[in-house]
Amino acid sequence: MNTRVSESELRALLDAQRMAWARNMPDYAQRMDDLARLRAAFQARFAQLAQAMSDDFGQRSRHESQLSDQMTVLHDIDHARRHLKRWMRPRRRWADAAFFPARIEIRARPLGVVGVIAPWNYPVSLALMPLVEALAAGNHVMLKPSELTPRTSAALAELIAAVFPRERVTVVQGDAAVGAAFAELPFDHLVFTGSTAVGRKVALAAAANLTPVTLELGGKSPAIIAPGYALDTAAARIAQGKLLNAGQTCVAPDYVLLPRGTRAAFVQASRDYVRRHYPSLRSTPDFSSIVSDRHYARLHALVDDAHAKGAEVITLPDANAHDAARRIFAPTLLLDASTDMRVLQEEIFGPILPLLEYDTLEEAIATVNRQPRPLALYVFDDDAHRAARVLEAVPAGGVGLNDTVVQFAQTRLPFGGIGASGMGHIHGHAGFLTFSKQLPLFRQSRWSGLALLRPPYGKLTERMLRWLAR
Image (cartoon, rainbow, N blue to C red; front, side, top):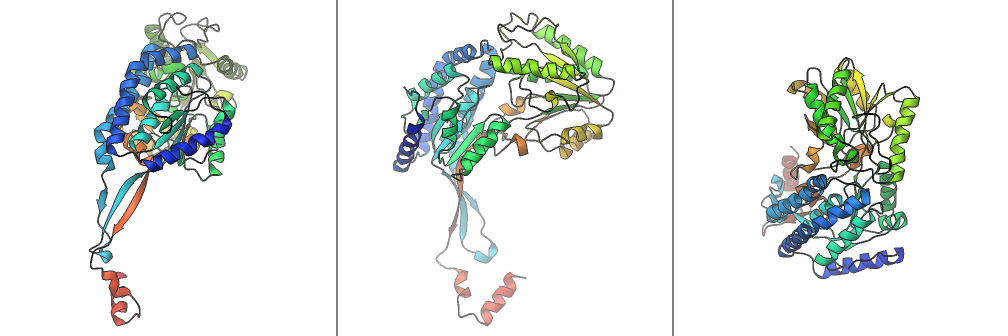
């Protein structure tokens, strides 16, 4: 069983993994076997993992854990095993005509030892999905789960220890100081999922070793509702994405831009959604708790700040729905929000949704582009040409058209941010490529035309160079 390690042991763990990888680099059979055994153990232990997550949060919907943590990991494993042989196959390319008859190809070669720093909000899927892709690419892995979900971290450590020897995959448990020391290790690649503020520190620590990083961060992900789009449909799909895991989702809609004059209808549609799907918010097992007292207090502080600066606060389904003892933060809409409010300056990471009205679509686009580039952009529009105009005008890590959040679960789509919302990609083949060196190979033939370009240079060389430079 993996136990908590001190900071002084981290380097020894990395060295052991690197030496083991060099002795026996995982081939196709080993990778397939690793993934199959991980899948079987994960399935057998998921009920324990789901309970650990619920205990860490105070309450976490079992069904949401199945949807967001179980199904995503299983689909990632199955997708990797289904396509791994093709991913590993050398990709042949035509050499430039001047070098005929030479041949070239690209081979996906494992990097070595990959470090994964996982967050607390989806502590199972966001730990195991990068692990799956790193293993598929033939790497060894050191995994640091979040200290905010200690029971889940311990359950993950038990799962990994039951499947892998420590020199192939190991779980490092510990507090923020251990996490900082982990980020300073000279990995062959480091993946961090979490806040932009911590992501900057991770990138700075990795830079000392020139460690390549993939940063999956967050930010202010907008939802733009175009004129004429059905408000009840938009409200339901935005609410479903926003209220998943009580809004503690990096790709959750962070604020909504809607045509002026439609706000009241959107509020009513949102109220109807909450009443229909969470008829008793204080007792339903389907709505998750906020992960800690500190985060619960932070959300109240965001609402208090907005209210003090003129925003109207609408708590759904009613003002008495909050439950501090269980850290149930009721869905909250903010009307008349302004940019001087913290709620429009910071990532919310909870079930609070500011509503902003616009007069023209260009105004909505300008509002979004004044913010740092978002991890996700959501556009609700039945007019394909108008929607395309928004997509072309707003840089974003990913896009959901007429829905929210579910783009993250697509194994055939790369997932990653842009600018302040992150760098690099994971998921499926994109993750396999991230954790592989794309090794270029030039294979010279028995006869080479380059032999005609050796000194002493003469008229033949000049004619050939003129032909090549024509």
